[in-house]
Length: 409
Image (tube, rainbow, N blue to C red; front, side, top):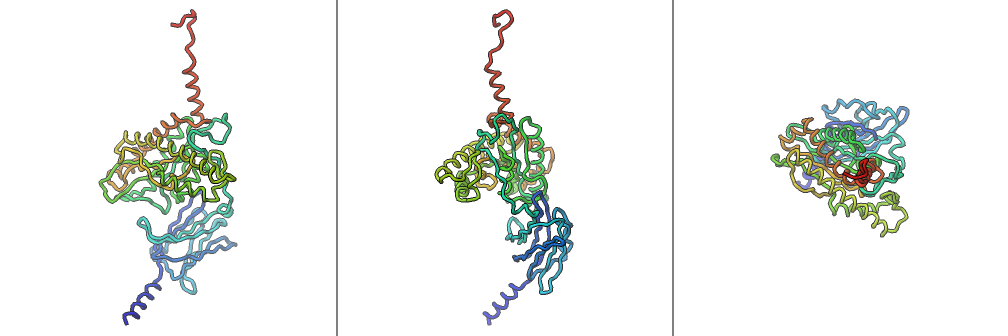
């Protein structure tokens, strides 16, 4: 009897319907994402229809909560959403499109305070399947881009605002979301860098949408960035903890990333300092990658130390030395990279500072000053900053002209 009762209970539990608790929609330059917050795991069946263009999502044994019935309005590729029960049970969601799009779906288990999710990404037709564009990248901070040496260029800083879209990051006690403050600081940092002669900045995201960690690196490489700076806000359970921190890639993280690059066939034709790894034997590939990565890590540490020093000028730093970690966004083997934890959003006082536009500006100024100090001392060849420094050296080496009488005073 106990056995039969157990089986009956298990059967009922397994047949319990899945509830859609919320539906969220966000769009960015690469497409549109729809997130379904569900009570427990469910595998979607997704297919595309034409004339008119639409995508259909079927969820077995699923119903939609009354709170979620007010589906979000359209944006990006999505014109509108509608949902209704299927004849054979379950739920059908129809997404009417503004243009043809390729759907890709996946499920996400509970994490970071969020429950089960079904995620649907929509990309414009031809974009998702397009072959990657070859990218020319620098090997290290003191190695020129693969452009003519007389083609003076700006130093490019890729600024990465952490999190975004359905990934809010950490949240403060008063409801401040990390994704919002990082974007504000990133925008201010870009504006400050763009005012610096010989430098310009690019943002990995310029609005509230989700980007994968690897895609953030790809965007920096696409812009041939000389440095990658990721902006975050820290959080811990102990709400008394305060201070800024700066991280660079750990040696262990670098080793694992190098192994991934060498094993991944998609990386075979990538360029390390203008040199293709394609066709090289494994030993030479490893040597080229080690040289590039070693120089990049050395530059990362020096630049990060400058930034940490500037942050210490404007407030409390959590640790007086640059920290090492295996963050994915730091793993480009050919771009010096750092991750800046601007403050602890879990601390009420620092949460208030992170929301203050004046403090956001001070943080942006501190990061700018640290990056500027590094490149002033180490301008990449072929850049306007390198040319200006060369002129200064020439001017210092030329002796002062003698006075008219022929005798130097």
